Length: 198
Image (cartoon, rainbow, N blue to C red; front, side, top):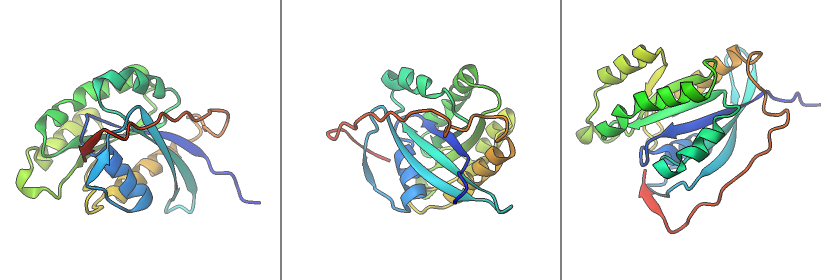
């Protein structure tokens, strides 16, 4: 009989159009969609992660809407979250400047035990980069977060970011809720008429 995997609830957070959906699809399906439907509410995927120590865990990955009108839904989703991928767009300084507000919101809503990984997405757009790596490093150090610069287009560093998240979750698994024990999934339909480039 296969051993039941410890499952962690992980949120993908950040401002609109930072590439959250494309980031998640690249990780879970290893594909890229250059035009993607705006996430309306939430969507959920699963991914098993095999760690170097021989342990395996499962991530329940929630793609969330970044628009202000959905923030109340996202706040409700914080309940039971063990990990968060917090994403900004390296070509859009405004999304980087929003990170402090996101961190404050997260820490106000959930326990300090939540594992946050900071991600600068879209590094493939080299000529459009508006946020330097050094700036990401400084912000990550300020909040004591692991930091990765990634590309949903090429897949660069995405697996590494999730492995780091999974490793840190594995280290605290006895202190956080295993969502196998009771939490039901709720999915909200996507408005198929809305589009945004990720």
